[in-house]
Length: 166
Image (tube, rainbow, N blue to C red):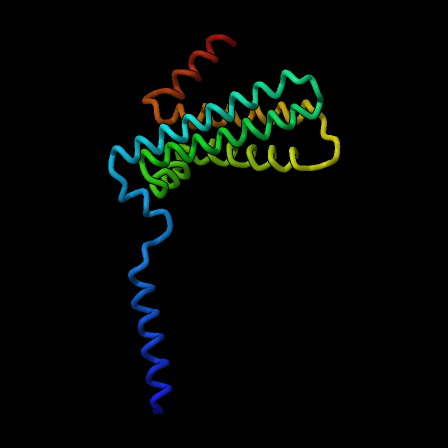
């Protein structure tokens, strides 16, 4: 082995050692203090509320294209608020909770409706406004059902109320 070969080997060895020292993605939230977590959550909640407000204000311009702007801003507000809750419990735990067997249905419907909303909003062709509004309702309904899974007996209570009403 020549001198150059052994130096190259040491570089590889250093890279591997450095690689082990790196933290996996999204673990930065695990190291935050309670105050930093609360600040992150409050910041995201405030930004989310501002985005929701802008979404609703966009409806007052009375242009058909404003429904698309509303849908985009509303969906963005949803994403910001979900990210904000990950400050409270950590991003990895948030993902685990979202995809456990109790919440996976609501999570998938929620994520798919957000993706479809953004896809439809970004399509330059004319899309029926009713379809955009329907996606917003599905998105909100899935988010509501997802949130109810965190409330003890929340889903069964709402199901009972609706079954008595029908």
